Image (cartoon, rainbow, N blue to C red; front, side):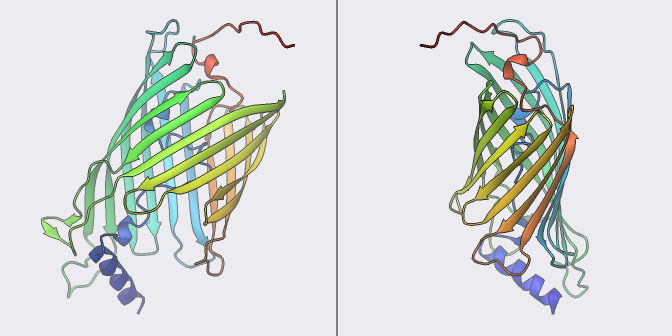
Length: 321
């Protein structure tokens, strides 16, 4: 019964151009500012850590058997940073893997390598351009000897390119990236499954702002907008307060979908982040909530963009009347 249901949903969605394999085509994270590189390759090398590393897991529909699970690993570094004037750019290189397990039948793996060029823009801040190149691997674990289409050997591999641009200074951060820019036809080898369908481009835009109510208290406000041509845009808004560079607590609201609590703890460059999403969607059933965990080496948000490498700037005197 379950097998027939999975096959029915899979084939029906393919016929309508939205494959179950592609239902969660792109990543979604509650702590999206912590996992900035996982969304935008232009974030590689944008901070003062020589090596950034982050691993994480996101468990959706907690309480249900065979719930969807997303895991990821990010590694980034920079080179050629010499500091100095406007023409002193530098480079970033990174690697990312993301795996999605949807029930016991579907497994998706994304592999990317990225290159980023970063440069200072006068006193306004810094700008970076990044490109991630990789592939998406889809596997369908349904073995039906009577149907050659539905076999345990079903694997689809698609190329993927993710361009991104980032502007950042000591207060503001603006990110824009596009996934599935290359519209690859969904095929199994040389055969088409269902009606013609393509991976839809997904646009990610985010903006964040830091402000300091007190010297030891930093508040980071962030907005993320996700859009593809097939659906309405979605909005995520988060606010996280960092106390004494170590402890952080905050929340997130995803429009018409979920509210979340976020807790992070930092020890020097080591960060641990935990979040819990409570679904408010009208299709909520039972324990339709989400847990997210991240661990890695990541720069503190208290760090200023002007502290990057040798890029130091003098502060002009200001007068208050």
